[in-house]
Length: 339
Ligand code: UT7
Image 1 (cartoon, rainbow, N blue to C red):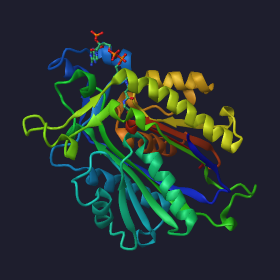
Image 2 (cartoon, rainbow, N blue to C red):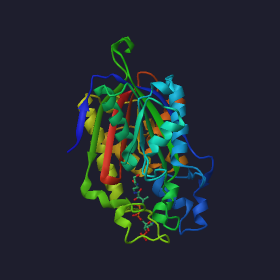
Image 3 (cartoon, rainbow, N blue to C red):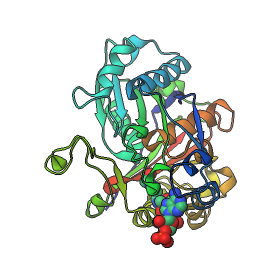
């Protein structure tokens, strides 16, 4: 079962931002240490390079940089932000939430903050939560951030996972929009429809035991918990789940694929993106794709692609965009919104 809903729009996308590490690592770097090749990685995934943070850098430091850019773009002051939510599966520490650290760093003195754990679907789950908080009247604006440094949980001796991921952060500001601010055609910008789903029977196809109670007896400091994945199963699940979530929001909104100016999918594998495009009848050239440059940045992939699309003018005011993600849990999420 999925949960989908159509809204009378009044929660708008007020600003976006992103931050990625400076240092880029091409596929050929892995040829030195793993039984792999640039040709295999490009052909099977579409990834050419990824960025990894320095060891002294943290998830919150990237989150704060992305969030600051989104806040600046929104024109809101730090005092006007009422909620901060960080989607991450690589938090700075177990306690407190990474969102608390970001809130303090940016001086968001009137906000409450917490983290969301929904792996690669985390940003869309966080956007749905912020939308609901704003619509319920709990707050009138929210900073929604996704930041993941998977370099901190990668086993660089495992070719099945090491070549796939990269580090980065993206952010968006959602804000309540009064009816008087709606476009002259009477159509508000903002969230149109959402769909969330978790097939928890597949929770074990993508895991990281590090830092959790389940690994206490088996993990040692010599064998810290790394990401482990049944790639083929995750691949199949991701295609099916993304397709289902896209169909949900199209059905809920009455929109058709041709109405969507840009589809922004999670960036795990170009072959997943191609299959989803084909299955829902959406042109690949209208999809935002950045995995060739960044690899899979987990929750951060979508907001980074969103910010790039906004800043390079690929999407603009009035455009309908669709965010769709799938990942560990097995979770999937979609959000249709008008910029
Ligand atoms: O963000 C959500 C989480 N992640 C994903 O959504 C990723 C989903 N899965 C995938 O993208 C793909 O399944 C992978 C990229 C992980 C793997 O691609 P695949 O085409 O499904 O390969 P496979 O798992 O079927 O493996 C084919 C062969 C295997 O060798 P054998 O058993 O046939 O001898 C693998 O060991 O490719 C081998 N292989 C590699 N070879 C060279 C796996 N990784 C590599 C590698 N370089 N890096």
